[in-house]
Image (cartoon, rainbow, N blue to C red; front, side, top):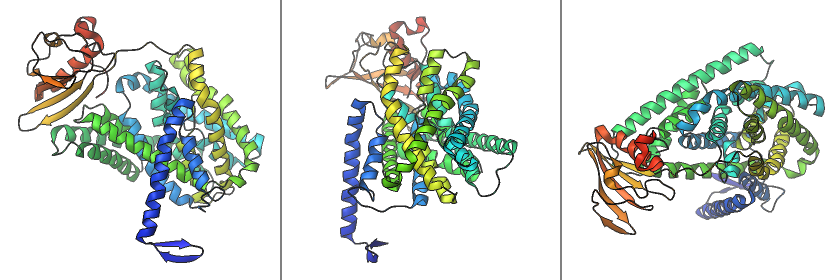
Amino acid sequence: MRAVRQGRERPLTVHHLNQLLLVCSLVLLIAVAAVRISSRSGLPSLLVYLAIGVAMGQDGIGDIKFDNAELVQVIGYAALVVILAEGGLGTKWKEAKPALPAASMLALAGVAVSVGVTATGAHYLTGLEWRQALIIGAVVSSTDAAAVFSVLRRIPLPARITGTLEAESGFNDAPVVILVVAFSTAGPIEHWYVLLGEIALELAIGAAVGLAVGWLGSWGLRHVALPASGLYPIAVLSIAVTAYAAGAMAHGSGFLAVYLASMVMGNARLPHWPATRGFADGLGWLAQIGMFVLLGLLVTPHELGDDILPALVIGLVLTMVARPLSVVLSLTPFRVPWQEQALMSWAGLRGAVPIVLATIPMVEGVTGSRRLFNIVFVLVVVYTLVQGPTLPWLARKLRLGKGEEAADLGIESAPLERLRGHLLSVTIPEGSRMHGVEVSELRLPTGAAVTLVVRDGTSFVPLPTTGLRRGDELLVVATDPVRDAAEARLRAVGHGGKLAGWLGTGSSGRK
């Protein structure tokens, strides 16, 4: 490898590598600190990451000249795979299942409405050519779950809203990517029904590959005991990436494949789940930071002046007309209350995907693609600044917050291969209804037993009459045939207390 500086090639030395590592580490530390700032201000942290990239760019203090859109697209795709995998692993099936029909309608019919309305507005109000208008309409029609939930995390919302928004953000990336690529390809745009057929086929292939890879990966991880717990997170992420690659190579939607495969694994009671979830969450943050910093570097601020007004106009059409119309047309058949429709209309935040997708026409050499990228950049920044801080306020005004629910148990499972059993590590959190329940009242299935309790740093073997408390850590040994039933019973008691069975409380929550 060689470094280029002041027009002359110079060898990349260890000194240069040390400088690069120092810059990267400082950027990461600043980005981590920015998460704390954004959590207090209500703004998605993506804006801070973009600002870091802009500050390092050619108009900033770093004066780094960077214009490699193709590299940004490749790295952006890789980052999106990690982000979608992390989102799929965190999707609760119990919340997503009832919302699937509505989310699918939003991701398909809703995207079509949004693209059409936004493209029409861009063409007639800003003078963009039809191809450019269609590209920008498709690019900005994908929502970003990370941006939405980073400002809504402080307000507990009904499961139907969170499930719909989360599933929509995971599903709508696939058709939007297909549309952007189709509109950016040289030559005439094919008939709309041919394009719809291609989208349907790619989505079907991606869904089939994702579900198959997710099921096979879950089965393998549950039946093959790895020698170290740290290998499970690596295996899970590797399986998710395999789903993306297999789906793309089969001419299907790799993005849909990785999301579905991750969702299957995330709801499959895998061993060492908390460690896996934490690892995926950390990689997701790292992917977002790296992607947005690069996108900020790609921007040339002094070129944005002429594109601010078109971005505001297109964003206004998208936010006030296209998004609400797509939500109403998609959700009214499901009898979704108007308050929920209003919140989901305003919660259509744009984030990582639109800016990354805006690099596709640049790589394909579409006329005016640099201007399209600038418009998308300004649109995302401005309307995130407007919508982000007002989302919690709107949720409260619409009275969509809900009361606190019983906290879910933290359960980690370690397989005991030779003993044909499992060791369940259970943490009783604040708010769990397992507080005050005696060990005998857990009524675990035959073949499972609480063998140890750790309380205030002290370990002891419990008696049947030992009462459990918040903050206790339990070690539960279960034979292989009753492992699932034991965990289901523990979660049921955690949510419903000692009368969980009588009250009809089932096993709910996450692994």
